[in-house]
Image 1 (tube, rainbow, N blue to C red):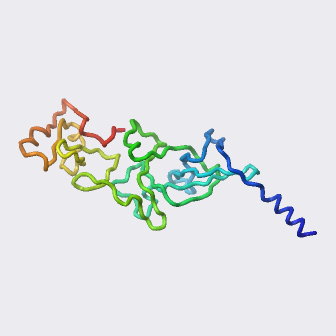
Image 2: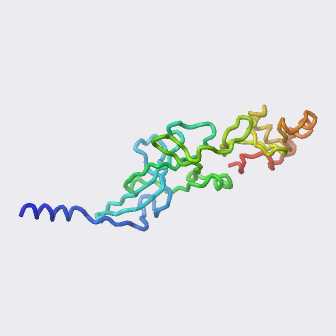
Image 3: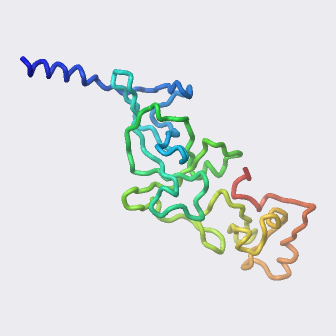
Length: 224
């Protein structure tokens, strides 16, 4: 008799779970769906919001809604830490999955592909980009190699101003070619050391402040 009562109680306690197509977060008046990227409240209020991709939304039938998420890591959260070529809005898609209360969602965001991000006319607070997948156990990245630029042979950081050589079409950081950012912005033409003679450099690397061409001086995308 007692066993039957316990079993009936447990059956009632385990409310059936169901997958939701969408869920509205009342505190922010935003509707989330599987596939959306969201900002989630960190346990430490001094840290920036966590970035995650919603994999599934689940209700337990008693008013509690959980989100199954896949975390994005910021560079400083990775094993190797932040490096010079990491953009300020860069995140890595990790293999770290989790289940969190939907109430911890602070807002929605967009995680762009690297290519799409570099073509944005303006970057908002809720815009991020991802070019790597990250293994949280080993610290490995996929892909493990990307194109490098400039004399310093660094991967491209979309936050950095760069100038493009009209000869070899490679991109260079102003500091790597003994130039200030202000001087780089005033360039009409630019040929790197390997593509021009001294006479050509004097002619083509004009620092004329009265004229400005942004055709070859950029962040490899428009300045924000």
